[in-house]
Picture 1 (tube, rainbow, N blue to C red):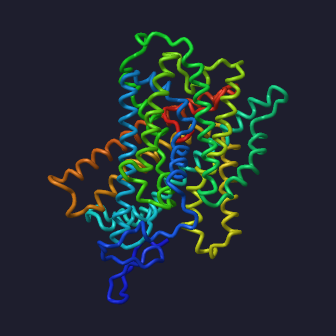
Picture 2: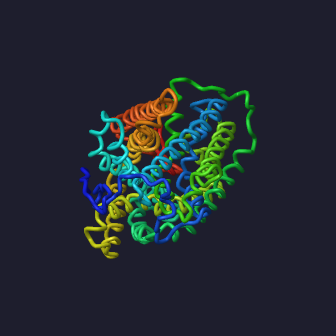
Picture 3: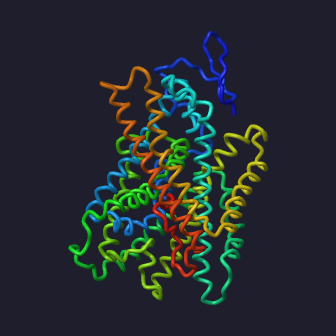
Length: 471
């Protein structure tokens, strides 16, 4: 992939060669990128909303009562809503900046990495030295994070299947991972999001059923709310912030969804897919975290399922529900690295060969499988990758992109656009530092004690401050 564009002339129009494509540099006010998209299998608004809900609403919600224990119930409610707004704002900035770049260069669609590169090339001179590295950096963050989620999903599903089967016959968890390998390969060979939509719908439906069954236990014998902390402890707030941010954020999935929509104008509108989806997700996280903490208080565990009666049939049903939902989610989470690795780097080299595309899809599954089966403490490293990746991908990079895209004449009165985005970048760096620090402390402690998550856990959830999106 070219990282240093070259200029040429064609029909009197100045052109720029970027990623082997000629892109006009002169903006066209009449050009609407959304009207020129040619997506082979576009998704409808409803299908996109379903994918968004599934991409952001996973078993990470199970960690919210513990997060509220760290923040206090009132602080937790307010800050969960604020974090939801922050994530939504960052995604709007990203989508809006990409649209401006597409309109300016008269191209129907741009990927996140290419958008970042082009923005830096056109931004303030003191930032342009970053442009040649932008594509590899953004792609690297996206691939590491998404593959990390897929690895944790494999461990999650295998451990929960083991919980069911061990009643009759005990096997090591690695054997269940091996059994899952072929179904995961078949799932990842589904080549477009439209085909995945019914699976996401099913996963959403059973996830809500699972949440409903958990609430059945929660609303039995609630304690006095006066026994709960209102604001929590200041030194524990970074744990709450990390858990909530990384559970809600879904930047990699969001970019892929917007690029594959049949009516992309509906994605970022006032009552569009993004706002509606994030509104539902944020309120559900806040509600579930509050009532879970109200029920279990200071005894809230890393996953609320660990607070459920271990011998209850309903507990087993909940366990099975989240296992199936997580398995289905593997295909959606794996879609992003496939799009990057195959679509951006290998597709043209192999002449868009279907066979080679399937080979790439299979190899990606094998990589996640081998990592999951060979590194018992993988979940701790995935939490680290989540802290490193999402704070920059979801907050810092979009803010930096907008600063560059609106340079030099659209920074607003007194440069308020720059000020706002610098604040957002600072928040992203804060999340990166606090989340990474906590993850590293947990990794060092785990290896020092030579311990991992207990094998008899009802649900496998990383015990670090950050929970990777959708986990």
